[in-house]
Amino acid sequence: MANIMIRRSAEGYVFYMPKRDIEDQITSMEFDTPEKWGGEIKLKNGGCYFIEPQSAPERLPYSVRAKRIDGVE
Amino acid sequence: MAALTREETQALIAEVLEVYPEKAKKDRAKHLMVNDKALESSKKCITSNRKSLPGVMTMRGCAYAGSKGVVWGPIKDMISISHGPIGCGQYARGGRRNYYVGTTGVDTFCEMNFTSDFQEKDIVFGGDKKLAKLMEEIEMLFPMNKGISVQSECPVGLIGDDIEAVSKKMAAQINKPVVPVRCEGFRGVSQSLGHHIANDSVRDWILSNRDGQAFEKTPYDVAILGDYNIGGDAWASRILLEEMGLRVVAQWSGDGTLAEMENTPNVKLNLLHCYRSMNYISRHMEEKYGIPWLEYNFFGPTKIAESLRAIASHFDDRIKEGAERVIERYTPEMNAVIAKFKPRLQGKKVMLYVGGLRPRHVVGAYEDLGMEVVGTGYEFAHNDDYDRTMKDMGDATLIYDDVTGHELDEFVKVMKPDLIGSGIKEKYVFHKMGVPFRQLHSWDYSGPYHGYDGFAIFAKDMDLTLNNPVWKMLKAPWLKDEATAEKKVA
Image (tube, rainbow over all chains, first blue to last red; front, side, top):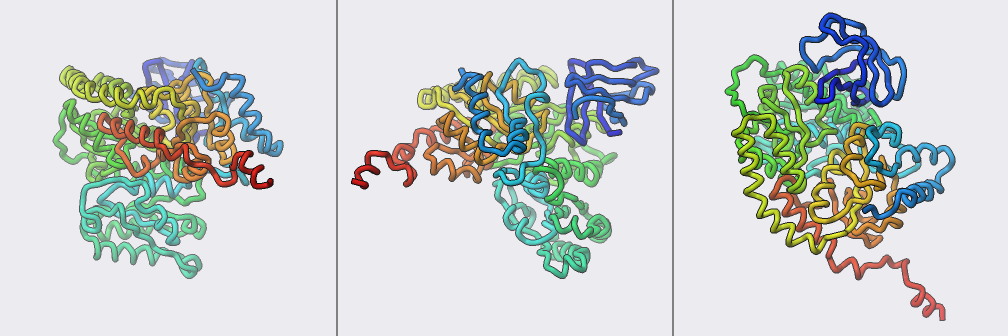
């Protein structure tokens, strides 16, 4: 589990992990509705993380705990 | 056009790596790449922010250097105590030439060395009492200081002193912010972690100090982040922003004050120059205070114009007109500079090896002068830096991460650049090799290089270095040409 920060750019969500200084585009997010948000997120660099599904944050950037499922570190 | 083709550059990397043992070769190969503009992510081609190999020469610094030397040191009205043995503080004092306005020793303290001067007994019995006494003395001798930061050196972390407790106690006693910074040199692989730790301590101890207090805002408030005013850089940047109609509330941290930092949460936009050392606090302010941040580049007229327009796009038409006005005003001046120096510098090749933002940011300035950057590299970058660098560099150019002494020497011998830009540790090696060299950490005691005014100085300095007649007269004593050597034998 690691803290990540999600922010929005012109191209969509951006993933950032302060601990490892990984910054990347999020290519897909499993749930992206106001009620249910999160789940498996896939990064452009091939990484895959999991955020406990929750109601969408009121504003971005938003810090949240995420679990690494697969991919480059 | 690159100096070498892609295949030649690949071959050069392979050749340079040949001298290493198998394991070291495998490791170092990951840190060297040939640039490919088509690539989106640097992840697969270059590894960065890893521990340097034992036995090779690295130019990296330590976490203390990143925190005390880079981020905290230039804050002029705070006193940074180098807590530990005396050497770290003494050799880190004033070396980066962070200019500031003020009377040193009265209301500003950047050039002074405050240290707890650890002795054996402090290691054995702990240095907390000494630290408290030191702060009392500081308060008595320098009552106009606005706050104190405690920069830990290695032994403090090793013996487990509780500098947080001392800081809290003393903060209450002197009624000023006292910030413990856990930036022991052994943390992390380079100074980069020191920047991160320093940013985190600013976030925890400084940033929210004035939350809720009245502040007279304007819609045009900005803060300059990650400009350390080396040779006056931040001043050369600030005048451009002010000329286009913005109000610069804070400078982080060159010529900056504690009050400026505490007021930063009130700005409309954070302008980030050194991404590597201050992105952490920008991201925090974006999340907590909803302040967007923007990376900009004030090296060379092309990039300055781009950046001024990008900055203006966050504001209304008044600022947009202001930006155009500034660009228009300086363009004839810059054209004159380029007309003067471009013929003397056209087509020359440059190799860079610096830290922070410069390996990618100065590329535009060299291109404005008709020069070409054939190789670049960072001491302590992370992958997000290389993602950005790949866009700025030409195809098939060489990129090296945490390059070793051997590698850099060999690259220079083969690629034969006309100018090298790096730091003091490399300077005299390349001078002896007879290659024109410019320090790009401290601008070789010149500067500023940021902004339009800075570019004129930059162009002049590059010309003075590169076209100096001394390089033709210089030959290392052991490099006698064969004819004279044979004559002696005969």
